[in-house]
Each structure stands twice: as structure tokens, then as C-alpha cells.
Image (cartoon, rainbow, N blue to C red; front, side, top):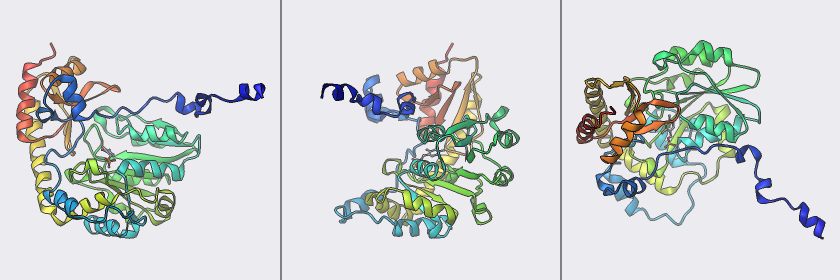
Length: 368
Ligand SMILES: *Cc1c(COP(=O)(O)O)cnc(C)c1O
């Protein structure tokens, strides 16, 4: 009896060693936490750190959620209504569309369909951190092919990085955090490698182009989109993918049956019934992006990068980016700083008054 007890493993010994040793993903912190830390009223916080829509969703979303009377019933595992709505909005057949609990969930599900331990996922940093993170959770190898100067994709280097273990290539377009697009010619060239290309168009509504029509030509292209950024529904978690049928059927098989809650479906229905209102906020943000960019360019210590998304990456010249971030925080303005891009800040596009407050704060908080 005693000996058996000694052989009993500790809980820590039961945990996967690779998970034990893994760094956690560092997401942004909630407004209340930031406000409390800096002693400011939550309403006074200017949140330019997560690319959310500061105008919020259509007012019809709250009305529809208040009126809905089916909260006690499980959602449809086949997402029939939601997929039809998304098909109508996107212009792709509903059989090709799968909704996820945010596009983050779809990134995870796609990896689980394809990856066995030791397989390789290629992505091009600086880019969205979840590609690497989810690959590691699947015990796959996250292969990084750095971008060229100016953050253009290095297509030749990606081709050279391919090995027999390579399965997936993740591309964000517009890319987060750099704001630039991948050209359709580059997407096609990577599709010709035969690997599955996941094109993450989370910022599609803010951009001038898309490579999504290529899904009709290539059975190895998946396009991901989301309602988090343009539609003001980040908190309700709705993303979707346009899938080749051969891949989509397997994602449907392994997804959690109730991954989309009924509130999210109600919210999408209400959003699409009031599309003009939400699209007007997208127009305002696109316009404000131009104004913010031009104002940032006037500062001699900041170099903004042109963006097709609702954020602008800025190089803080002569260093001091994290100091500058802290100076802005003390004034209630929150922007994003990444450990892997120490000299840069990513600033989400807000309302005109946010731009004005930001510019005033930048001028008062010169890092040197
Ligand atoms: C924000 C973001 C996502 C995640 O969107 P959700 O639908 O909220 O999960 C995915 N990809 C990129 C590139 C993003 O910036």
C-alpha cells in the first residue's frame, strides 16, 4: 500500500511537459483593470490597444438581445441560420462557411485538423501571435520566416522554408500589427506550393482588396474573417471561415457542437439587418485612419506605417517606445507594445476626439 502511494504521480507530473514549459499568450487587459491600476475612471479610458470599434455595434443588437426569448434552448450545432446570414453577407455559399467562437477558435480548429506532433506551421513575423501559440499547443513546430524591410512578405524565403513536415502557411492580410496587405500574386504563388494557406482577413472591411475569390479556384485556401473588429462584436465572439468543402467537413466534425452561442447569432442577425449603420462607422474609422496617419507623420520622433486596417504601427525613433507607452498610460491612453517589436507601438484608430487627445498627449510626453 505504502509503495503504491509513493508511485502516485503528482498533478504536476501529469501535465504535458511542453505545456509546463510554455509561455502564456499575453493578451490586452480589461478596461476596469487598466483604469484601477492608473486611478482613472473607466469611462475616461481611451482604449486604442485592441483594434475594437469604438462606436460599438448597431443599436439594434442590444434591442434584439433584449427581445430574444430562446436563451434556454441550445444553439444549432449546424449553425444553419448563422451560416446562411454569413453566406448572404460574404457572397460565398453557406456550405463553405463555418462560424467560430471568434476567428481565434477557427485558427485552433484548423490546426487540430491538420497537425500531428512535429508538423510545421509557417508564419511571417511580425504577425498575429495566435498562429505560433496554437501551433505549439498542437505540439507542432512554429516556423518563422521574417518579413523583409518595410514588412513585405518574403515569399522566396517561405518557399525555401518548406520541408516534408510543413502543412500550413498562415498569412494575415492586412497583417496585424504592420497593417500592410499580401498581394494576390503572392497568395497564388504560395497556394501553388500545395500547402494549405490560411489567409486571415480579420480587417477585410477596412481594406481595399481581398484574395477571398481565390477560394473558388484553389482547394487549399481558407479565408478567415471576424465580426470583432469592424462590427463592434468583439465581446460576443463571432468569426467565420470560407473553406474548401474537403476541409470544411472535417472542421465541422471536430468543432464543439455549441461553439456559437445564441446571443452571438441574434447579434449577427441584428447587425446585418442594420448594415448601413455599421458600415458608416467603418467609413468614419477609415477616414480617421488617414487623419491620424497624417498627424503622426508630422511628429519628428514617430514614423507611422501606412495601414489598410483600423490601426497604425508606429516606429518610435531613437528608442523609448515602452517609456512612451507608459507616459500615454498615465494620461489614460492605452496603446499596444509588443516584446518582439521593442521600438514600435501599435495604435488603434479611434474617434476624432481620441486622435486629438492622443496627439496632445504625444506632444506632452516626448520620450526624451
Ligand atoms: C483580432 C484578430 C483575430 C481574432 O479575431 P476574433 O474573431 O476576435 O477571434 C484574428 N486574426 C487577426 C489577424 C486579428 O488581428
